Image (cartoon, rainbow, N blue to C red):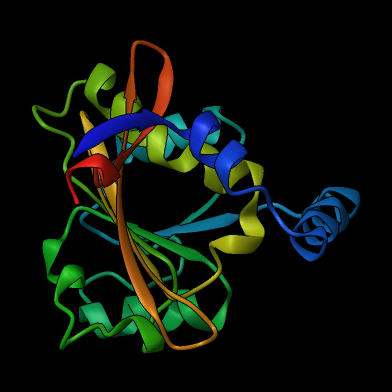
Amino acid sequence: MAWVNVAEVIRANLPTKKEIAQGVEYRRRNAKVSFYTDENFPSAATQLLRRMRARVTTAQEEGLRRHPDENHAAYALKHGLVLLTCDRDYLDKRRFPLIHCPAIVVFNFGSGSMGEIRQSFACLKTMLRIPQFYDKWMKIDAKPDGWAESARYLNGTTARTRYRVYQHQFQEWIKDRRSE
């Protein structure tokens, strides 16, 4: 197994014409992802997102403090928002199966320093650029040193992929096909 630059992976698996057209249409419409933070998400991280010009609403602003996790997930799904949290309960596949969830990003900010929060936000860069792939059926487990994405596709299949940013390069963990 090895880390490979994502640019190489994309060159080996070029997008279809339909995928390109979809991306162009979202760009033309200037579609943007919007986030919802539950009460476990630090206010410093919310403020940083807003400085990055991200659209963010919070559980406190929506009057949803002290609500169960299921209510936060339902609110985000109903309003087409990506749920941001530090509550690892959302990674439970039985309580929150991909098919019934909004896109959810569960953060572990390490010590909670602004540097580690920024590093953890690396997983949001693709989401901010191409939001059409992050509306639902996606969970991301994000840490300062990388993240794992679990996704469900329209055909019912699921996949889990690991990513990191290393020496300013966006990388994906892939199985080394030479060892097969």
